Length: 412
Ligand SMILES: [Zn+2]
Image (cartoon, rainbow, N blue to C red; front, top):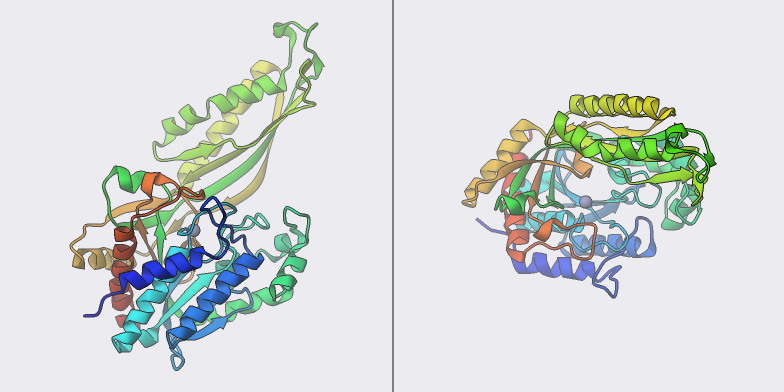
């Protein structure tokens, strides 16, 4: 049986990392930027050089397959965009490994190659317009078009202007959805982006699900007053009330579920004067867990806790939902297929849920979907220090090849 060419896989990863490369060793292929588009063109060129047909859809997702193939397909791949000052593996690894898998099948003249399609998704990171997974949402007919229409990037440029410059437009994005009917399953290989595999000495892990992400904005109203003349006992300090509630987040979350995480990433006090008791405070709260019920329990418990604290401080609180992305479950049969693929390599894969969002979450709502992780050195990602050993990168691609072959053989 042919196996993937590890040297070629690693060389391709290096070549792609030259596009958008930064002096500090990081990568910047922000979605729809010139570097991102250049990365997409590079991917399409490598697909054609392998004797395959490259196609770009209206969302600028790049697909590759045998010219005569008509589907249904096992789709495999990941995203080609990066976060600003990220590194070369997040997303790119899964896309380049998918190319190596299909190339290997074609070189082996394996008839299953006709049932395999590869993809490099666009704008998974969501940094440009604060809306992630755009490429896979377009493919799956789930585009949040109204939100996207109003969106501007950090420079204030309207989304449609950005898209037109990149070679498509808002009105055309949804055309990408026509291809969904040709897909039978989706497999995504990715770096873990966290420390759990390394801590447990896992070389490969099958993903059981992707966490739901719940984001809220809280507002606490107190009484703005003079910080020199107002005794503590007579204050209605919105800042103090917010800070007390925030300080209790970790203990509250852990008391409900040890695997849940939460983050308060933005805090503001108003009006913001060194001698002014804050009359108002606002903060964000993000909660993540793979079970929707746990997320709800944490969100409810925090609201009650904040209300209690505000009552004690003589303040009032209100909450606004910013976004809610429900958890995604991976397909059980596909998980078993991935585990068998690892076993064929003499590996026992662990099972993990993913704390980060992935295109697989979107696809899982439409076709049987599975994900495979390789470890991240030091658990670092979304940073120039992100790294994975070459042996793990090759091992992951070898497991993907085996899983794709089994999935493809099961297509009716
Ligand atoms: Zn990613």
